[in-house]
Each structure stands twice: as structure tokens, then as C-alpha cells.
Image 1 (cartoon, rainbow over the protein chains, first blue to last red):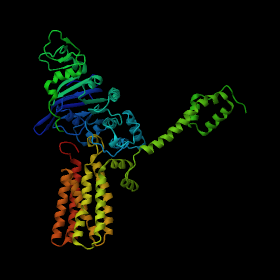
Image 2: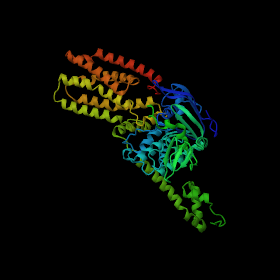
Image 3: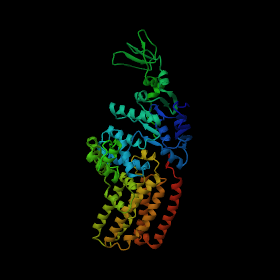
Image 4: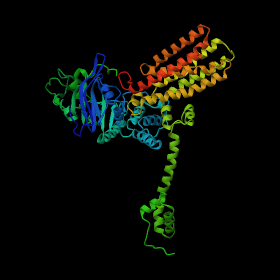
Length: 297
Length: 277
């Protein structure tokens, strides 16, 4: 368990365990989150979605306790409601009411987020639609939106009311490079005052955006620390050479014609190169990085 | 009248004037000054755009509000006229669930309008008694759990029980009058046209209780089969009226009271399987 350097822990999870029958999706996980953007990395089936669903009060843990801004996310109904008042959540998949318009959908979520005054609520809906670049098409029906536009619409609702705890599951899926860059700008802004948890398979998003990374595999936390420290775990183990190194965890021929090898025994002519988040991730998880499907949650 | 030519309206004063924030007396005073002061007029000449922009922005905000606010479906416009809250209307407009029960109720109206040409037919009466109470039941079952984007709505502070009951109440309020109207205009139904309301209340509340344990499809199936057995048994004994006789009505009301009690207890404690309510 590590504490965020940017302030006192705002979100705390202790001994979190979740079982589905005989399958253990999450096994005695401890973590704390402060302000800033934290990346949550892990292969499919690692328990990321299960952890996120518990943090967002969607499911109860089999054992353990979560507190969010002083309220118990694993507590009675009133406490969970308090947690939800601070929460912005983007699930991995969203079932949209396809006949609704962009404005109508976000307005609906804003009502559920207790925006009672119509005029300020509509103002907020317009603000978040602008934020994700959908301000020009508020009356467009959801069924006519492209995949990227739908993803941005789902993102828009998570920003309603500038939540103190923003949980995003694969937010950049379906976004083009420009949209991805503008989302990064938005999230880094959000991370200055609030807590952002970003579950992703995109290691480049973690490298570009996060100060901290948590790696989870087989229901357990495998790494929890700064991105620099994480990259440091692969230091001296990434090589460029004319051919694949013997014993390399993974290797591929790059655009320059040289072979990049992660791990393995260096041969004559092999040069060490700066590792990336992806290298550290692949090295840490090895074969685990590609196994299984996400546990149904 | 002497004008002090050394005094000029400052920028803030001119801004208040152009933006319509100066009161009548101040506006009149500024206008009097402007008549004699070419410098202030010149400064103001650069500023009217701000005033116009404000008026334009206000007008545009009004137009935008009208255009962007999605139109409500007919059923919700009716409920709004009956006093439905604006936020509740937004919540209901997101739910597709009202369409199914409405379509079902309309089809049943048409079927019975056609059946009206056979007044007093026992099979027609039995069919009516079988279907009429199930319309609100099936409406409630389909509406109960039909929140769009349920993963997102689950993470919002709004009470999910209230949301579910709001949808079910809207379905009941919009379908029951339709079926009552249909029963009233179809000849040959006699007192059956209204007798179904007793079982409808009992079955709907029972369905709501079962929904706190079971999935909608199972609940709808179980309640429908149970009611079909009651009507079928009465029809088989050639005494259809027994299923809605005063004694039976009392039983439905007792069922309703019991279900309401259990429902109240379940609302306070219920958790959805593996998760939270």
C-alpha cells in the first residue's frame, strides 16, 4: 500500500476481496488514492473492472472496506449515496437509449445527479458537451452517432458537476489521436484538483498522463508507485539488436529495421535502450499479460 | 444649463449603461451628458456592440434552450399537464419502457373493438378478464428495470427504487385509463368492464414484490400463468364471474395489502443480487 505524494488519501480500499463462486476476481487488495491521475493497468481478467465496480458502488465486495472522501462506499445506503454524489463514472460499455439526443441523454444523467434547477442543469449539460467536442450537435440522435462520438458522449456525462472522484474505464477507446490528446489535457486538468482513476490497456496514455500507476494481475496488486519507478523496473533490460535476443520475453522488428527485445541475454552488437511503460508492463506480467477474458462482473 | 466639460463618464458607467444595468435616473443622466459630450459619445460608439451582443446572447440562449431541449413524447406531455414534475418527465423520457405497454394497451383496445360485434360471448369475456389485469402487470414488469445506461445510473445518487416506482407508476397511470375506457365502450362486458381492477391492483403489487427477488421475465411469466390458471378454472366451471365475484375481490385486496407491506419492507432492505439496490 502506498500513499499518493500529492496529498492525503481521499479514497481508501482495505483488504478488498470479491469472489464469483469459486473464482476469486480480487484477492485482498489494499490501495489509497489522492489527488492526481492514477493509471490502472492489467490484462483482461485481472480484476480491474471488478475493482472499478466496487469503487463506484455498483457491486459489494465479498470482504473488505472502501471509503471515498470520508464516506463508506461499502456501507449502508445513505453512505453509498454520499459517495455517489462525488463520483463521475465512465463504464467500459454503455447501453445508450438510442432514440435519445446527445443533450437529452446527458440531461437525464444530470437529473439523476440531483441537478434540480432546470436552467443551471441545461447550462451544465451544454458545458460538458462542449468539453468533449459535441457542443455543435446537441440535437443529434444517439443512433446516428459514430463510435467515437458515442464514447465522447459517455465521457461527457462523467464530467457533470466536476466530480471529485472520476473513474474512467477505457476512456480513449474509439477516439482519434487529436481527440485522445484533448482528453488527456482535460484529465490532467481534472487531476489537479480531484482524483482520477484511469483503467486502460493503452500504456501510452499512462505514460503521457499519469503520475502513478497500479498494475493488477490475477486479482492482486503487482505494482503500485510512480510511473518513473515503474519504467525503472525495466531499466537495463530492453535492447536493440540486429536479431532477436535469446531468452527474450518479447521481441519485434521496429521501423528502423532493428529488433527490439525485452529481457533476454544480450549478444554482441546489442545496445541498451530506454524502456517505456509498455516494456515495463510486458516484462512484469510476462505471459500473464495476454491471458483470459475479464471475469464477468 | 451648464455642462461640466471636464467630467466624463468612466468605462464602468458606460458599460453599465450599454448593458442595461443602469437604473432609470442614471440612464437619463448619462444620456443628458452624452448629448453634449463628443468624447463620451465617441467612446460609446465603440461599445454598443457589447450591448447588442448581450441582447443577442439572451435571445440566442432562449432559442437554443427551445431547440436543444428534446421534445417529450405524447404520453409524457399528457402527464406534464396533469402535474408531472419537469425532472420526472426527463427521467421518464429516457425510459423506452412506456412504449411497449402503450402499444400493448392500444392493440388490446383494437382487439376488443373488433370483439364488440359479439356481445355477451363468454369466451370474449374470459379473454378480456384474462388480459385486462395483465396489461398494467406486464407494463410494470417491463418498466421496473428498464433504466437506460444502467451501469451509469447505478453510480448516481438518485434513488433507484424511486426511479423504478416512477416508471411503473407512469405505466400504470397511462395504461389503466385506456383499458377502463375500452371496457366501457365495448358492449356485452357488463360489470366485467370494471371488475378487473381488483385483480389488477393485487397482481401488480405482487409483481412489484417478486421483482425485488426475480428477473422481470420470470416475474411476468409467473404472474401471468397464475392469473391464467384462475381465469381458466372459472371459465372451465362455466362460472367466469367467480374469478371477480365480491369474495374474490376481497382476496385480491388482501393480496394487495400483503404485497404492499412486503414491498415496503423490501424497499428498505433490498439489494440486487451480488450488488446494491
